Every structure is written in structure tokens, then in C-alpha cells.
Length: 226
Image (cartoon, rainbow, N blue to C red; front, top):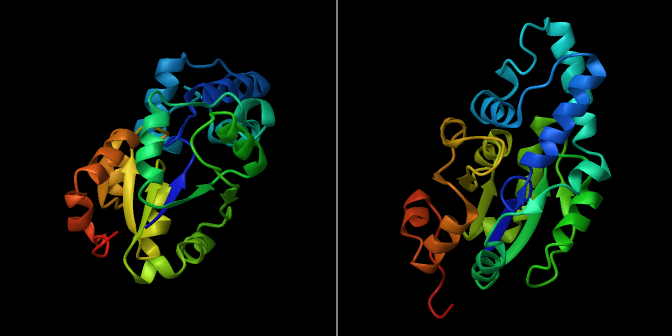
């Protein structure tokens, strides 16, 4: 089996990193910042439609997001993302069941690779694959990463963003949304996730217990003897 996992928000807790970028971006454009709880709640529920700069004109909000996007990709901010609690045990359960490929919608894949390595999880994690900034290219990129396992129905795309879930759906891959990142359960469901979990540990437990929910979503069971 092959897992294509979005590292941001699934394995890495990006909330501190994104709030640091929010503080810096708001200061750069000369606007007041939100408190951390409000920022994260609005981000998870409304995404770019959230009133992240209350009272700001669209041109100011556009300037803010251009700055925010740049700041979330700095080495310093990427390094602020720590592993979620219990990740070592979750990781063991996943790696016993297949190959793992990491992807990100961000550009700084090298910093993410270093951050993941710092978690000291079991096995060599390999590099993080940065998907295109052009959403039209992402389904093809995911299909290429899936490779021959896709034809066998043994690929699961695990994402914390609605953008990745949509791209995987367009590639006809089975998707599991994990609502521990930048999108809450409603946004992942609306994006078309076949199954949604609150955290990666719930997905691991499903696999341990037979993955009936994933099989109902279209993931084929392992061949006999595996």
C-alpha cells in the first residue's frame, strides 16, 4: 500500500508557524493582529474568506496574504511546526502497512524535510515533494506519485487542506481528510474527502482494525497473505 501524506497539518502542527506568520504579516501591512485562537478558528472555518484583517479593504487584504504566504515558507517559520502528540506510535502503525510519500502545497520542501527529520520518527522519511502552485497540475503530479499502486486500488491520499483533497479527487484517488490542520471537518467534507478523521491517529487505528470505512470509500483490501 502507498500513503501520499500532506505533512503540513497531518504530521506537523502548523498552528504556531502560521500564527507567527500572521503576526509578522499584519505588522508589515500596518494592521492589528488577531489573537491566536481567533486567527486559527477563522482560518480553519473560512480560509481566505475569513475577515482576517477586520475592516480592511480588499487591496490591503491582498497585500497581507502575499506577505503571509511568503512568511509561512521561511526556514524559521517552517521550523516552528512540531510533531503532534503521539506521532511516534501513529507512525509505527502506518509504516507497517505501506510506503509513505510526503507532499506539501508550500514551496520550501527542504525546510520541511529537515523539520520532519527532527521528529526522530521510525524509518528514513525521505524528501518532501512540493506540488505545483498551479492547481491544474496537481492531479497529474499526484497520479505520478501514486504510480502503479493506483491501478491496484492501494493508494490513499491523506490531506489536511481542501486544495489537496480536491486535487486527489480529480486524480481519482481515495482520499482521507485529517482535520488537525488548516481546514476543519466541514471544509474537508465539502472538498470531497471520502473519509474524514480528526487526527492521523484515528486513521492509523482504522487500519489496525481492518479499515472497513476506507474499503467502503473504495480502497481495496490487501491481497491474501499480506
